Image 1 (cartoon, chains in turn red, purple):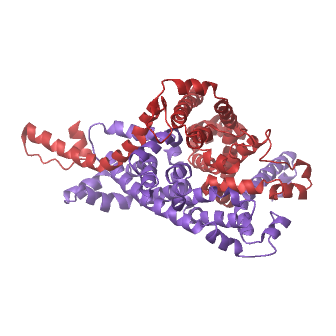
Image 2: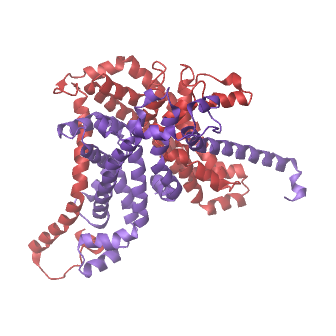
Image 3: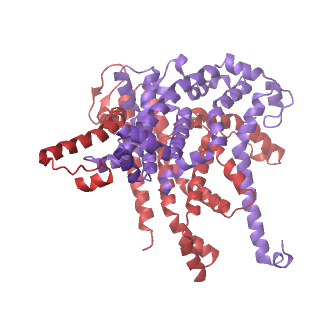
Length: 314
Length: 284
């Protein structure tokens, strides 16, 4: 093994018969360089990423206010989570947001397909769709908070085009605000999906498509039976990304747009975690929420990959 | 264009379909670009003028909002605070991920494969889930409310993806070149600097723009780790200004616009590099 590696990466072999000890010493010296190169990044990752991931579990069994030392409380936090009304509501909201997945995947897929047909102005569209991608969720949240005010521009637009009857309190109505939030989340992220699928469309295997055409497949059949399967890896990647975003990256948007309201109607799990930790000062409990959150994402990601992989044709 | 097939019903149907698709894309493009117009217009008009037609063109221009954004809202200070955190963090991430990716791709050592797997696994670790223990680690190190604390946290959070991205670029550097450099007597760092890095320049550019954008826009960890008002970064600063809303949308819009300058520069000049970074995981 060592010899192969030497050809690939190590210094040119000296060929002198330095003996067993010399060789193993030299091998040790060869290991020192990469380990030294790796050390700073590994130290930082270990300290602020790996160790916290382990400690998250430890803290989830404690009661901690952030000032005194954490006190062990056994499984108390987890039994509380099971009965926590706000947490359960938040989880339902996250699942509802996740239920919009077909739109979340389908819209960018369709747009990328349309852009790939070089529809008139496709370059401009591709450029424009990228703007929401670079905006901070904080900016998006505040922007939509202003635009969707009851006397704001959006209702103004509805009135001026004769759809005034649709005007409503977009961010202050228990029944529709979550839908508005879902719409904004999709608006904020679809540009990334378009990019991913465009990259997929431009790297399609044209031989397979031509072969399908020669065999008499219609345009739709080619889409469904050839293109779709070739893009499956991108669909899978985008789905996992959405999964992670929809459970852990909504905080800044919720914080600025609705602050969880009206009431608790747009609470999400990550928003609940922050509130428990830094508004109620219950950091041990919040850590338990974090652990549960991680478990949910891991299970959901496993399910998604299982479903998508199982449906792949042999 | 040609007259004969255009009259067939099937062709007309397809044309109509294309028009509908085009209108949808156009509406979406307008909604994507409208924030830029709306915030610029609102920042430049008086409050009364805004109230008269909130989404439309301004008729009474003013620069008062911009002045107020700097003097009352302190967006200038917040922006500087952000730069003091983001620039060192991006530099640190870039240097550390260059070294690490170089070690992982062009050297061999025990557990190298495991290290690569660990890097990929850590990308999937959602930062929010470990917010509390990260907060505790920073607190225990006495770095809470210190910029250094946030710089180090940002670096740790974004290192795995950065290493992964750079490693995928470094894979394409031919080993013969490295061996040639070694035979010429160049040490490992010299080889990295003069042989490897010039060849992965597009990857570096992608990495720097992407990290700069993500860190500039980051909110949660900044909110939790830099709690004192004097150190607030731009996103925390403008998010905590909710009270100003009812009084003056103009100043808020001016602040939002200022906070959008770096993202907009990246949007206009580095879109291609950023796109490469965002799709790196999907295509490779």
